[in-house]
Amino acid sequence: MNGNLAMSDPAPDRITLKFNMTADDYARHAAVIGRRNRSWLGVTAWAAAGFGAIPVALLFRLQAAGRQLDTEAIEMIGSYSLYAFTLGMLAAIIGSSVAHRIFRRRYFEAMATPREFSTLELYLTGLTVTATGAQYRYEWTRIRQCTRERSLLLMWITPRSAVAIPDRSFGDAAAYDAAFAFVRARLRDANATNAQAQGA
Image (cartoon, rainbow, N blue to C red; front, side, top):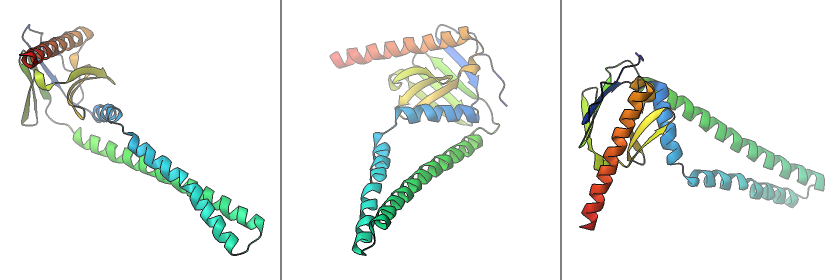
């Protein structure tokens, strides 16, 4: 059930919104978090493994030379071992990427099975998210920032966790702008309060 729901008329002190997340929403949410938390460690590991093909090829050439083979055979063995190692690395990278995408898609589709709509309440002291019998409350001091990425309004609790609201849930641009302005104002107030507390 993916129909749009209109936001209630914004009051000065409270906004209530009902929404649901589709598999595509979950995938975009995960992509944003993955991009923000991307580490160079994985890239470095793959690069190191790739460069590891060179000593492997040299090792095979050395073994071939020890068997007193002709120069052409030695070069062929070294080249073929280099090609085989490189192709194996590429196959491993592509295979793991495809398997990861399939797993993620199935996981998100399972999460997005038809269910009751979630409810988000924004008020002066914090926000509440109610979904499938669970309720989560956060004060504005817990919210690090609010961003709009990949058609999602994201209120970040930690670098790896955010309350995500699909843009379509707001009904129109005016409702979205009102909610975004409300959240930004609350975050400014929370930051000012934190600054005063630290300066006291």
